[in-house]
Image (tube, rainbow, N blue to C red; front, top):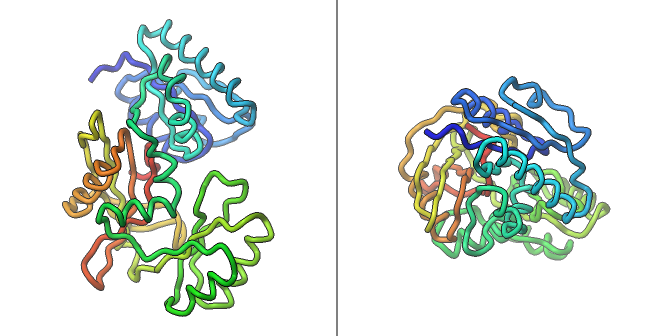
Length: 297
């Protein structure tokens, strides 16, 4: 493994960033961080960070691009190679894809031939991409009004999962599992007070936390799968939260569906996909696609 190429991680939250520092840092890779200005986190205390630089990401995109270009140039002069650019943040992953032309002059990172990050991070678009390519995924609707919710309830069974559709809108509702009609409308009406509709209603796949699987993978040029690592949750932060105890475990169905899905959309780079085993038909259903370095495992 070549350990002389530096890595710059853009940190706007997420414990997966600590995993990158500990893994690559222990191997001798020079690790650098650009962090959100004013952010406080134990992640910042890792001994493997060579340097940490703060930046206000609310500034205009042109200023952020210039700042990152200056950082990339500085690290290239120090190490003799353009740095690898990584993140576990959705917003940053989309920003990198949106500005890939400018950033590629100073950084190394995968580039898909067509945009894939935003469509995969948008839950409604991800649902349609999965169905288009024959990937099992829970029944999902996107209501734009109370009338749409009423129509959904004519055939829906509780509990129902409510998720934000677009993570880049001004208001992103909290994920929730609702058990009855009153709860659903209460949350829907509450969310509408903060902004336009930005939710999907999704079929709840019955089971326990042990039925939730994650699959991390890396896709290179032409979307070849160079690595795939399924794993199963043993415990999670909440009924819809991130894993706090998991185990890597072989699962060829999960691995193959991950390969098939990402290759079908032309994805390149690191990805983490959440799957749930459905004992009703023996399928593994795609729940979420983290189109970036995953925070799990």
